[in-house]
Image (cartoon, rainbow, N blue to C red; front, side):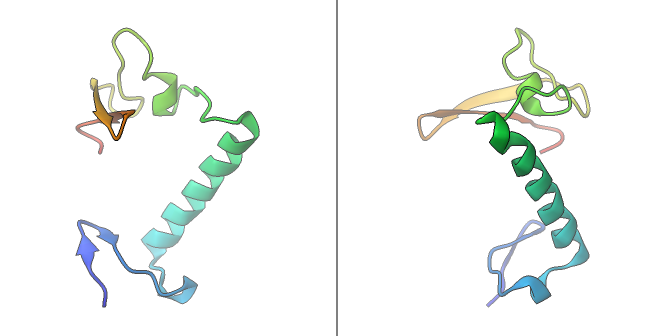
Length: 84
């Protein structure tokens, strides 16, 4: 069974099941993880939220809108309400 939540699928049956958008997302996730892993954390790059989340007035690197912050499961989550 395949369900969709927004644009995200909740079931995966293998690499042949990937759409082009899924393949692009997978490629970008892999690239991000390869960059973050050697640093031992997500590095504070200006093009990533980590480069902005701890500033006094954090803003989104994409749209320059304000970032929101919330505690989820004992951890702090930071996101852009417009872009995410």
